Each structure stands twice: as structure tokens, then as C-alpha cells.
Image (cartoon, rainbow, N blue to C red; front, side, top):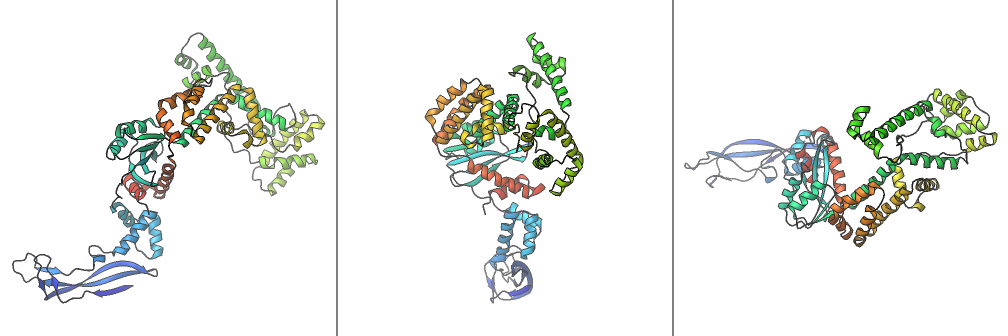
Length: 518
């Protein structure tokens, strides 16, 4: 839709000499795009007059009268410019262009991105409580630093790297900062000390809890052979004492047990060779060279309490597993035909091949042959068998309160602490640290550090030594209320914006959209 608008008035003022003249030289039409009316694109055609300047001493011979201020310098009205800028900040280029088209705003993705890039960045107001954390422009390769005002819950700045010098320079320009919430990065700690020595550094509670859970996870990973044994004890208790052997989980595996045993025996022989060479005084590097294995493996063998079993691989389980109870029930009813069972469970949603069912039936038949007749019903009627958890999951079970765990997990934790008394101590010290952070007890920090340093677990000792090096920031965590939760939320928002713009999200464009708060 087109709307013609004519300027009014009998005269115009020369922009150079300031005189008014009424003699018209010519007229011309200027087209300006405007906001749509009910979804219909709208443009204004403004007829503008040109005038002679009759002042012989004036440098301007011909001048035009001014158009309305809403479209004084561009081909779009101010309202349309603001609308396109808001769409660009909110949605970016491609998505913004699609939405603009549906709304009747004719603008390409490049136009929207130009609007975002040309918009002035919001001014940096004074900040009293600063949150600092890193973010990944390209994960594993390029990292930057995000700065957030924790008091007013808004982003302040985005730095292109995570170096201590960059943070220190920014802090020198903002001497009003009183508190700095950060993770336990040494780079940010050094930058805060250099740039704002007057500020109180506060280590984030979430990062401290995460570090504590990682300590417990490393401890569990070092004793994963005991984790397997504890899980086996729980499974045997569930199956009412069959002392015998493999569970239905092992029967679902496609791997041959003979191959597993042969692989373990080979690794155990290598473990004995490493210990023998180490007892002769040979260095780790020489042992690794002589046996053609990695030096880290040699170090793990030497420092392990016993032969380190392979950690269980993370797996989502077999696709046949949900149908095992049905197969057991049908077997107890007298149906032992694998092909018939496969057809029945396929009608219930099973998408696997018949060969998998045949393999399981073959192993089930061999398993039942080892059991006494009265044990057949117990095995086939067992609802579940307990699986060995991953190191991370076992660590979380150790950290949680015992009464909050389901019965089988509670039994697993008890079995693990019985098999490894050191695990009981790690559980007690780790729970004490969580309680310390939850209740905010700065006066109890020194006692906890002494208890952790006196522990027999090397992981706890190392964690305590790291906290001592950053003791003031940890103590401030227990004293002040500030945390980096808002910073983590802003990083999530930054990730969303980065992924929304695909490959066009360079640093300048990303910074402009991130700092713009709609």
C-alpha cells in the first residue's frame, strides 16, 4: 500500500545563510518504508520542494525543505527501524527474517544483522557484586569470559579470552567492585588479585560441591572392583541366594564370557610383570618402554591397592531387557520355543532380531540346568537383578543421606562400606563438607580441613590441600550470601543465542545480542 504525503508551508529556510525564500525550483518524491497496516506492507511517498537561494553570497544555490523527523535521514521510519532492531536482537538473522515476513516487514537476514551490529552497546553501569565465569565460543578450543552484575541480575560485558590479564584490566577500570563471585580457576583468582585487591573473592558453592562429588567419583573409580562385588552381593540377595553365578544382565550381553576371562587374565599377567619390575627398582618410564604400554597404565598399576579391574562401561542396556520378565513368565508356563517367544514380544513392541532371543533362550536353558528344581521358580520369578552402577552414580549414592535411598541402593552402599572401610570414611567426610556448605559454618572449616588431611584417601587429601590454597575464597563462601547461580544462568542464555545464530555468531555479533536485554 502506498500513501502520498505532501509537505506544507509557503517558504523554507536556507540551511547555510538562514534566509527564507518562496520561489520553488522543483519538486521530487521520496519513498520511505513504514510499519505495516494489518500485515500489509506500507510505504510513504513524500513530495518535497526544492528552493533557490537568492543570496548571492550564499554557498548553497539550491536547497530542499526538511522532511519529517521520523524519516529524516533513512529510507525507513523510526518506528520500522525500532521494530527491525527488536526482531534482530530477539531472533537473529534467519529466524528474524522469517518472522518479519509473516508480520509484513520486508527485511532480509543481512539487514537485521546490520541493525544488531550498528546498535550502540549498553553503557556499563557501576557494579558492586561481580560474577565471573568462562564460556566456550568453540568447545575445547576457544574460551571467553562473561561478567555479570549479581546484584541486579544482568550481563555487563563479554571478554574474548579467559586470561588473568584481561580480567585484571577490566577490574582496574571498575574500582567500585566489592565482591567477586567465581569458580576455583587459578586464572580468575590471579586476575582478581591483580585488578581488584580490595574486593572479596567468593568461591561458588555449586562448583565446590561439584569438586567434592568428583573427588568421591575418583575414589570409587579406584575401587571399582569392590563396586562390582558389592553390586553382585545385592543381586544375589535379590535372587534369594543363588550363589551361583551370572544374572540375566550378563545373559543379555552379546559378548562371550570366555573372551572376557581371557582378556582379564592377559591384563592380570601384565599387572604382575609391572609389579615385579617395580620391585627391582626400575623406573616407571623404563617399565613402560620395556612392556610397550602407556606410562599412565604403569603408574595406575603401581599405586593401586590391588589389581584394578576394568570399570563397567556405561550402557543404556539391551533392547531385550524390558521383555525379560515376560519371557521368564512364559517359560514358567511351559513355552520354551525361541521363535514363538520372539513373535509374541514383537507384538508388544520389541524391534530386535530373533537371533537375540535365541541367544538369550540358549543361555537361560544353560543357567536353569545349573539350578535345583526349587530354584527355578525363584530365578524365573525374580523381578529385577541389581546392576553395577557407574562410578558417578555410586558416588552420588554415597553422598546422599541413607534414608533417602531406595532399599536396594541402601543395601549397595552398606555392602560397599563393608567391603571397603575407607569408603565409610570418605562418605562421612564428604557428607560433612556438604553439610558445612548447606549450613554455612565458617568456624567449622578448619576442623573439616584437618579431618580431610588426616584421611587415608589420597583424593580427600588432595582436595583439602587445594582448598587451603584458596582458603579465603572458600571461607567467604560460608560467610556471604552471593553465589554464581545468576552467572550460570546467563551462560545458558549465551549458549542459546550462540546456537541460534549457527555459523554467523562471531564475537562482536554475539556480544551485541548478549548484552542487549529486551
